[in-house]
Length: 476
Image (cartoon, rainbow, N blue to C red; front, top):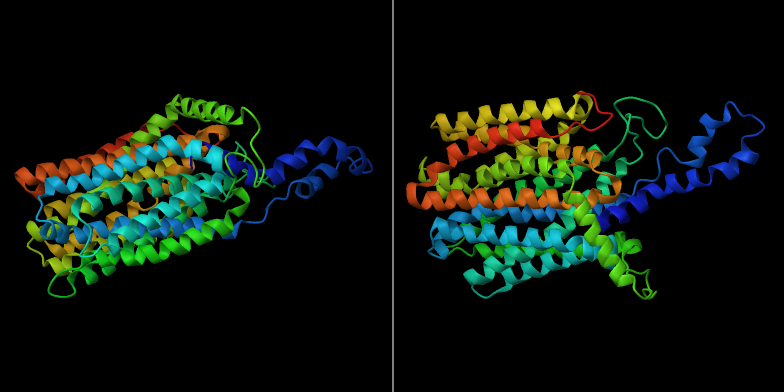
């Protein structure tokens, strides 16, 4: 799960140990390096700018927890969908309202996150997102007899808005952990090689936490929804509610140093005219981000990629029940195979992907996903489908974090978080639009239409990745 200001907050926090000593280097050189000029520069760099500044573990764990909660929310929908259709007596076409609300929430998040960060700081942005998600989950699970359909749809908008603020803030913060890596692939020690920078590892970790939530969610959702003669599926949301409260407290503690009151430091008033200046700066960052060609090309990749993932995760259970005649109580666990595979992929594949080249490896993963999806479609066997969907999850797992890492290298530092937030908007448009199309077509011709849509989306994902520019200093 940052917007413009997030980048500023993140980069100020992470890069300050480097930028400040470099600014003061000339004054220190006059008395520190004069006795031994030749060996001093190589030795002085680690002293002036620590090669490995202290890792902000509390903030990283807080960001990871927010991704875990997002996974719990998103991963449950596929398992709950058959119960929603029967509980509300609605068609698959009406279910698309959930995806539309999800898209609306992310769109509002992209348009407001930069301004909110300018006013409240990175910590304020993350705290607002955590609080909004906890409130939405409380409404879902505490409404007597389950929430009405309209309330349930609106809760998706609120959860998506909260996720949008936390996802963009968290991704922007973690992506800046690699700012010490130079354009030529040098690490902070000045050594060239493939191991410089740690952002790709931490991005892989926090996105693995998202998939951990997606892995656990179907088990909890299917078990709770199937319990009793009358399904009380809404009680599942007590789980993300509990984690959400912890998430809010964790954010307030870990990011307390970056929470500001209306654009000023804690307890300080904002100077006259400061609000207008912040608004202009936020608007300028948004315009600058949207003028970057790389934002649109990377956004196109995410548009198709998340469209395929959300379509598969949202409709695979209904497909197996209706087309493959699977048992509804058992098929609810199939998305866990996809999530488990994706979890392993996000843990095991980031390092080889980084070392052998993001461009090459992501292309290979996309080709493998197309083949596995064809296997799922053409082999009418539930076991084969379960294996194929799990492997599909494994090879598609590292795509999100890898593409974010590439984006962090492509975008200028001052607009990094704003650019990432709009890339997220493009991804959520795809993640909402294609499940809607699948639902509308499924209401007329059957949910089997999911398969050709998925194959087309994965092919488009592969082609769009080839259009993404190569970051400077990266090997092809």
